[in-house]
Image 1 (cartoon, one colour):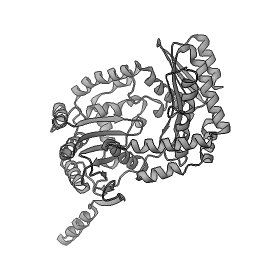
Image 2 (cartoon, rainbow, N blue to C red):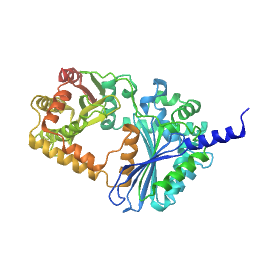
Image 3 (cartoon, rainbow, N blue to C red):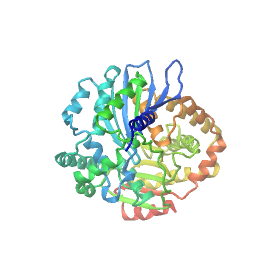
Image 4 (cartoon, helix red, strand yellow):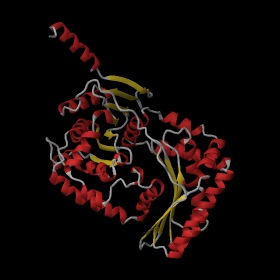
Length: 459
């Protein structure tokens, strides 16, 4: 039998462990740009960035779950759940959720990616407590009714149809499959018609309970806010829902895992009666934690990141073979992609591919000029700052940084890292990435002879 003094000691010890831990990650100037982080008992992380000069605030909750966490039978479950969390809780109906934010002129939305999901609301700073209460309620107390699953199924199937009607969008899903095959990273975030039709409320509820644990969530808030007030309001909302059950729980770390197998030299063609042929030519890139990602960002900008880039100049400006042509990178926990997209007339596919392949091969062998690299560094630095000029972008930056890297980097540090990239760094990453055998995905009205020739483009 435990004595009263022993119980009191145990209770005191438990309360001591249950104290929230707060630290300043980035100290801004006069309070502007200060990033603070609190870890609540139960493992919930709260990260904020203060910007007193604005009158808005963006509040978001990031879940460390994406389509990569799905089995083949569950493909599309993460995105399905994103829809369903807007359909109601025990306290609010779907109309209550939407009308609460509409009534204050705010906006609310969510997005699902391969490795994370985010739910957010942007409101006036004075309406932040409402946004916190609504979004936390959605994340912690969704009811996921069978009838809502059935209704939302139709909306998701329409979303899949809409994506398939846009070959310029669909070709990127095809390229992911070309590179990764029947792997979670190679499957579409939306799922397929078959997998969405097969998903029921019970399976989605189990998925929800497994992945929406506080230890796998990050709360991010940016704008004219007070960190301590945000922490108190979030904690009250989660405790009201009984979500912070284990005071000793610790936050999950950034995602790790086995290196995903990527292929080289694969070609996938999807015949469609479209006016244009849509092309993605690419190869394996870098994981998002790779230190060379800064050099790859400069390389990507110089190759296809703007109107002065090599690909834009060679394909569009000099020859007029495409209206849209660009390069891009995607970084995941253990791997990445580098791709070049172009949309052109079907008769011009081989010419466009040859130019793109020649440019990639040339840069892999000879690198970029110092002038091109300097221009790309300047462009990347400018776009980085301009892309962080609103509270939504700031919330995205601090939320994703905490979830994916487990650390924060100030804007000044980011600009310094970009500026520190040397021509040799860019040339080295160009040899490594662009020197690999590419894969190819094409959607369009291709004839048999054209299709046969496309396989030669990646030989």
